[in-house]
Length: 203
Image (cartoon, rainbow, N blue to C red):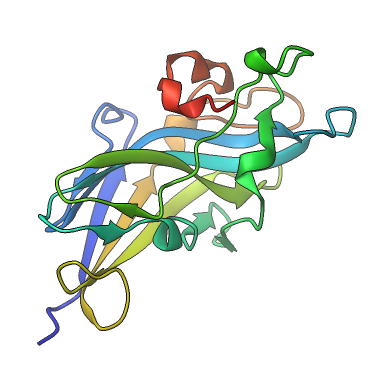
């Protein structure tokens, strides 16, 4: 018998940005970073013009005893902007993208964005970035949603026994003033990647 679907909502206000975690029955999801209209360059084409994306880094914690599929769900998220426009995940090969703030001739100085794992084992944790298109000037994320399907123990496909939807709702006041004339906004400083896990640096 299929359990009723759960839709879990976290409202993030200016006075409550320290707790960005939603806990479900199977998964605990933490929004660690949100970079809006962030500049990246594709590997091997560093002379090309930078591309811009809105990126969200999540920490996934499996609360169940069995593995759960992560990648398919993490790359099927939705972002609703402040103009109520819905954006699907960007079609991008994240393994080839480099943070343009750290590009140099020395490959070891280039910072990459970790891709969510295909699966996460029982009682394990993992993190990864979800990519959305860049947003128009003076527009910011209003909501981000990720939906996870839970299958029978030991399975990551087939019959769905349960679903959990995680929704982060942002108060516009948390984004503060515009960073520059181009209208780029950020919840977390793009240069704050220095405190990211070493898992964010692949060679």
